[in-house]
Image (cartoon, rainbow, N blue to C red):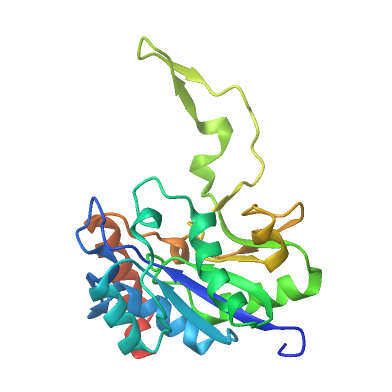
Length: 230
């Protein structure tokens, strides 16, 4: 892909976390949480894997894992209400100023430790087959979450049948564990292009670490599926 540009990976990991303190470097299956995303990214077809963080400790951990950390993210891009798009653009601008041609930009959240390199590579293949699109990872909702089994709670606390009686399979964005865009889409001020393709991951692979309960669940799954042997 070098003749049309590099495949850039961006791992976003800010320092503050509300529910699980120091979440991005919190121990998970014997390693800092960010390790699992870094390992998968570095084993994938991504040409450069860059860490965007405002935190020196996370930056140091990322460098030790082999990630590029060319700068610390500005504090104004590391607030609770900071949107994803300006964070990606901040990282993208660094490489564009170095006149590096970029084919794809892959956003990876460090809180998805069960995502593997084959998921990233398959998503990149899907992106390259379609061009000028967005690829986002999704997972199928278990049937217990189908809309025909849901209730809506009114202001009096009474349960009402959900208006949509649809029993079709539903997919949902899983974090996203993977989000791939072109430079054109990001520079146009959009996080999603007009063409969106989904890459399906198993529901259990899509766990997003936000609480200690999420972490314990992830560790149990990682032990069961032999992630520590990778």
